[in-house]
Image (cartoon, rainbow over all chains, first blue to last red):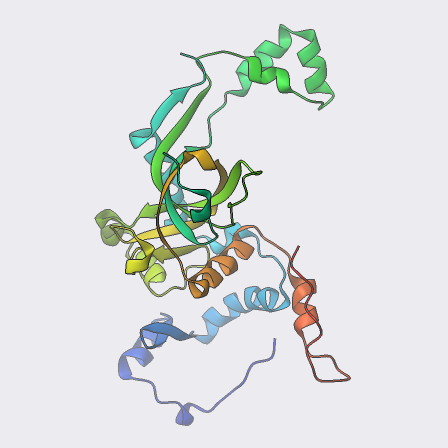
Length: 93
Length: 194
């Protein structure tokens, strides 16, 4: 996938953003409170770039590769929610 | 009692009796099949299995909950009984305490499959919530009680992107058609998504 490269001297990043990247944390840049860019550490980009390449081509990505452990936990909680609060209706009385 | 059909437009947020996937115990079906050679033959042949619907056993239970849903297609035509919806759930205090990263992704609108709603007045929800585009299913229109609010066309673009991911839809042919034509430099005519 083609990328555009710029020199570090041409980019002004706040100190907290540089520190976050050193800790391998993505940095989200917002514009009017909405995310405009996400800056990644190069090692993280190596993981993400195959997915980005597929996305650019419009190819499907196995959905489970897009889910984190948090997501799986949320999905489990959603099904438990049904048992806790749902209205149970048997097909016969 | 049910919401008027004119309210059932794509992007509407409605309160509906949302069915959960019933836990149908396969062993009941197989037990009935063993006692019914005709049904067994149908199962073997992967033929019509309408006879299974006649099984009247307490083991078959359907669960419902009255909850907000997002209409992801238009359901204004009388001729169609069902409409496809995605479930909406609350973002709870427990989520904020124990799933902070997940909440942050929703707030930053970078979750690939779920989307925050309820933070704008036009959504019509009382609490901050999220739409889960992995949890999509048809509901009977008679089970839709009323319209609460709606998502804007711009917000629905975010829903569409997440649906493409959640349903693993291959849009490569569509994307290829959007690329500039080498001879003219103009994008070629996009084909409608099927």
